[in-house]
Image (cartoon, rainbow, N blue to C red):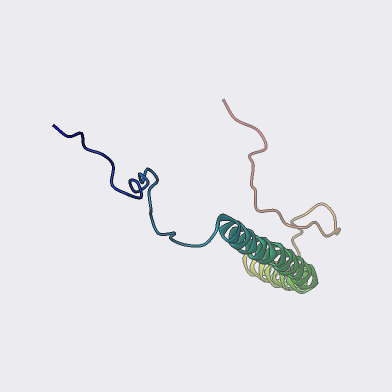
Length: 119
């Protein structure tokens, strides 16, 4: 029996590596892309926070400038109520009765509390 011999020129090399096609970009391209997206996000965040601070400052200044007008409205309402109370007292009690012990103006309060609890 003749012994089998390798073919002339030898056998082909054994393929032991996987021969897969490369998909996508190289890793550094993805790394640069992620950093660019994050930089843009931080840029928008930074300017968004700055815009929110500016809007808050504008709201505070607007409210500060409205306080005198609102105080004047409240004062006019207090005067109107005071004159209405005086007219109601004059109608009920007449002209010569004095309700209070002094002529000093006391700002009216709306929290009525009993002077003494009876038992």
